[in-house]
Amino acid sequence: MRKHIVAGNWKMNNDLSMTETLISELKKQTITSDAEVMIAPVFTNLWPAYQALKDSDIEVVAQNMHFAESGAYTGEVSATMLKSVGVKTVILGHSERREYFNETDELLAKKVDAALANDMRVIFCFGEELAERKAGKEQEVVGSQIANALFHLDASAFKHIILAYEPVWAIGTGETASPEQAQDMHAFIRKTLADKYGAEVADEVSILYGGSVKPANAQEIFSKPDVDGGLIGGASLKADDFFAIVNAF
Ligand code: PGA
Image (tube, rainbow, N blue to C red; front, side):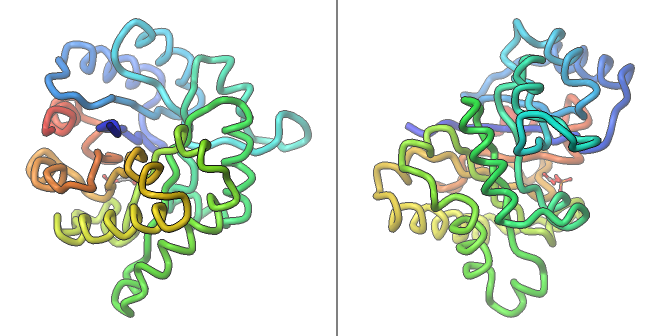
């Protein structure tokens, strides 16, 4: 059975003291659903977050990493460095990385390889822009983002991959894909995986939805059969809201 997962992407928010405060609020909450829970603070706060949460049911994950092990890449962080501070899962391909830092499918394929070579799990993000949806090209775009960055992998690699469909027009905009739009795309993503790797592999991959998920809409979105959880931005910065979403399953 594939897992339910709710991951909070804190993006470039929360300094050290805010991180400590939010984590202490998260620790007061109770997980009443079967969801695996993750938070992704900024690099500088991964170690204190890991220390604070290592005996809890909340996993600390990273928002990004470089593909190289080490070397002359000023400002970058590698998989081994993440692992040395307790991080075992990394978000790759977020639309903000693609848009503001010019991350391409080709670069992301290298990052995915580096994460897997280091026995890390990957939350791989993708999604179409508004103009692409308006032109009816959302499946074409999503299909090629997945194929370009992941289809060089063996089927066994998908045990370590979580997919996150995040339509760019729904991220941070307050506009959410309707539960039906999310389900349609998630079913398409699962079929794309099944066509390449077989139904058994496709059925085991968790596919998260991201884009303005809130306590008010989480339950309806998560009720769809191919939606296995959420990648939560804004609403993950408040402990009550985040846990309302975690417990929406
Ligand atoms: P949002 O962000 O929930 O604030 O829309 C989601 C994301 O970017 O992962």
